[in-house]
Image (cartoon, rainbow, N blue to C red; front, top):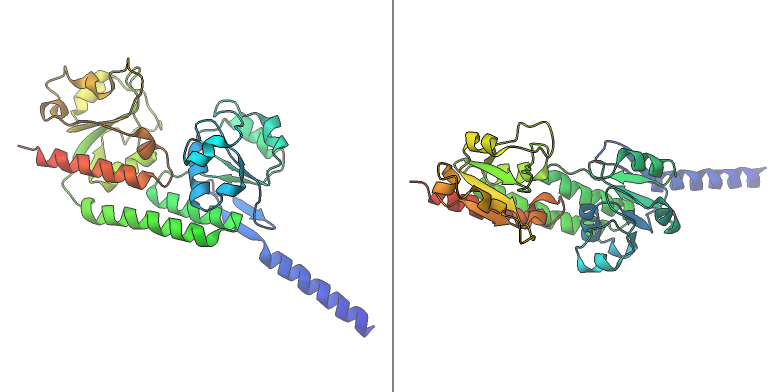
Length: 294
């Protein structure tokens, strides 16, 4: 009897230890993600999520990515499972992932529901503020058992952001129009990482009040707001005007003062660790804008 009780106590203790060993985080969608053990095979369904996973030290465990996952270089060699419009569900299943990192704003609701029905744990990555990028790195490190690397990466990112905040956040405001595309003309509203970067640099996004995350706007609407600086995400098509679209509009303050800037859009709009580098470049441009005031 004593032996049976001892065995039962041991089994209960092991069960409690196992429960305590479970990994639990809350993702960007506010959902609890629980894993019995660190994930070993991860599929990333957003380019920014791929960057976050590599930053967290989990690059070797990423077995599949979505199209345009081009950073770091090692990500380009990984199997692709479609793009944001059409995920190859069968390809995802064939890779046998034990964790999916998804982007609610970039992946279609229909396909996310299909993936959910597979029963594979899903982590939603939805950074719209700089602090959430560091948080995602840390949480992914927990889910993948790479906490030490993730902590260091998060500290480095948060340190860069803190330094920029200390230097620029209280500088004189600069009204900024951020141009995603010129034909048709698209910008980004207040619920995007770019808006947080502009604010960090002491800027004011002139379309921050838009409810739509990426609204299409008219030339007249931009002229009416008369931004002091226009910042465009780099466009590689030779037939695109980019920020040069505004040069004929001599009444615009940004044109009068030569404040038409082109930066690498991936460093600003893709919510991964490289945003800190994009923020540094944008802050320098807005500081130049201040210096050009008459």
